[in-house]
Image 1 (cartoon, rainbow, N blue to C red):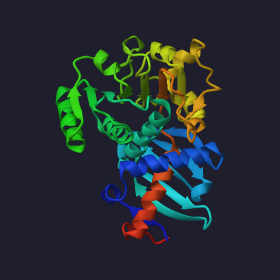
Image 2 (image 1 turned 90 degrees about the horizontal axis):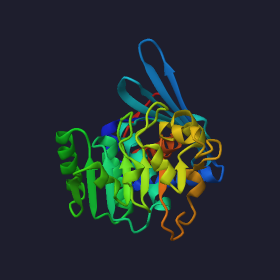
Image 3 (image 1 turned 90 degrees about the vertical axis):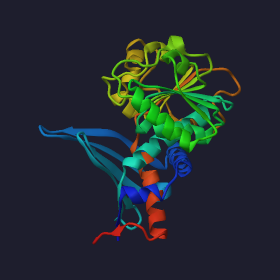
Image 4 (image 1 turned 180 degrees about the horizontal axis):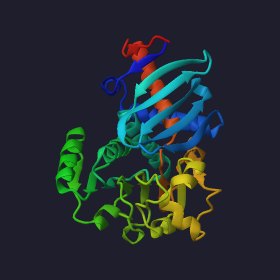
Length: 314
């Protein structure tokens, strides 16, 4: 019998540490061909539209999908058990989506960033930026986080919220974009259609997690960021070709072959790709269904164990 799990219940069933662990496990399954992922499907009507992400993981005996309306509303992940051939759960997945995106950046940073990174710069002060900071600070011994966003009030609220979560870390408003870009790990988590991060501002050896651009028409980073990056990794090759506006200019200028991009699953379960060298790295994240079903499976397992959720009549 399937269960329905509400957002309020999800909050008490999973942590960021959990999310990082299960997202990495899902990527390892993908690396060894035990998990598959489909690029995002988008359907528009005259009244609205819907996003659909589909994935399956044989190691977890799970297959499923996530749906989200263009206009907002409740996001859902639906998962099935591939052994029983039955639906397992329907999960409200707003928080789950933010957690898995942050967790993926933490996994990417684990394998790509300088292990001794101590500063983090963030462009953006929304809910995605929050889980990005949360995830990276769980993975690294971060001493200072610098935040840059358009809305001063929203930025101050963000700083207050993150400071409560990590009271021993200095969370500050950056005086300039250049100051943010000079950090060891830099995250762009905005809806900007024009670059907020420029390569000329970056320090050699930085790592960038670019997570806000999931449209071929948007670009949070300029071409020079890509040009200065010794290694560029995407979450999913097919999905990046379809909607990674950050890399469009790089493809057009021959800097990157869109058909031979490194995927995140290619570098997990391996030593850090820096191998002790001072190199600059870039992770381009559009968000994939595999991360959603990996975390959804954990949420469902815990809900069943703790007798949470509502049983459905099928």
